[in-house]
Each structure stands twice: as structure tokens, then as C-alpha cells.
Length: 209
Image (cartoon, rainbow, N blue to C red; front, side, top):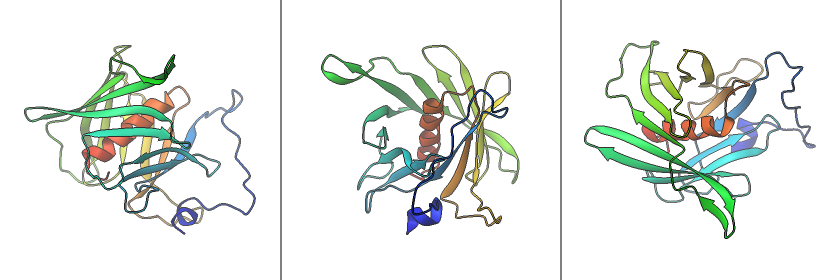
């Protein structure tokens, strides 16, 4: 019932085509449900435009874990997230995985690092800094800006260009769904897996996962 409510599908799935080079927008839209597929579990589920599960996090009976895994629909680990505390600063390290001689292997060096902003403006409706992201391998820096007390935020690059945006999901008739059902729009040039990792970190920072 919950899945039908969040991502309604017909009896026969008719996947929507992915963005192509002829698509001027070239954006990908996901539905994010801040719930685990595991009964009584903690996590989130991300659905693609075709209505199928694209990514998921299942922490089972453990909430606010210091070690979280982002998986694909088949349960293959894609990212490992580790929480590090440095005094008042909270930092999450993201490690990617690769196929090695012994199977799936975690890279020894972190892919990206997310540090929570020390202060957040409390003005309602105003976007303010939530966290700063550093992609360790390339040195690129991103910023996560959000609306205080709401599950709405933007991820922008060093030039201020928005690469991804999260908002409450609305139905085709304009009905706004619950606070745990969100719409994630990812720009054509963005690394989608990186954005998914940052979405999960945001859920951990706001204690939704």
C-alpha cells in the first residue's frame, strides 16, 4: 500500500525513457521515501522514473547508525558512510566500492566528505547552509543549503550552480504528500550516485534515518 501511494504504477510497468542528448533539460527525477523496505527497519528508499527501486538504505533495527550502506535494488553495496566526530563538528566520510579479484571491495580512501555547518539560520522559508561537501579525489567542493525545519534543500557547486534539488512531492493533481515523501531532481551533469550519497547523509544529519 505504501509503495502504491508513493509511486503509483499501472498493472503493467511502462518505464519512462531516460534523458537523452536530445532532451534539453536532461534532468532525472527520483522519488525519495524516507522509510526502509525492511519491516521495523530504519533507512530510505529511492525510486526511479520507471517506478522501480533504484537505491536503498536498510539499517534494520538500528537507527542513527554511525555506519550506513547505500545499496542498489539488488542489495549490492555502492557507498559506505562513516560518521566521524571532531569536537562540535560532525563529519561523514563516503567510501565507494569496486569489483576486485576477491569480489566487491571498498576503496581505502574516502570518495567524499560532508561536514555539517556549525550554525543554521532559523528564518522560515530562507535557504541557509546545512553542510559543505568535499570530493576528496577531485577536490571539487559542493554546498548543501536548506530551509530550516523542512526537508527541502539544494546542492550547488563552487560556482553556485544548482546540481540537485529536494522538495516535497506533489501528485499530478497538485496534492502535497507527507513530509517523508520527497522529489529529488538531479541535473544532467551531476554524478547521480554522489547525489544519492549526499541525500542519505542529509537524512542522517536531520535524524530521518
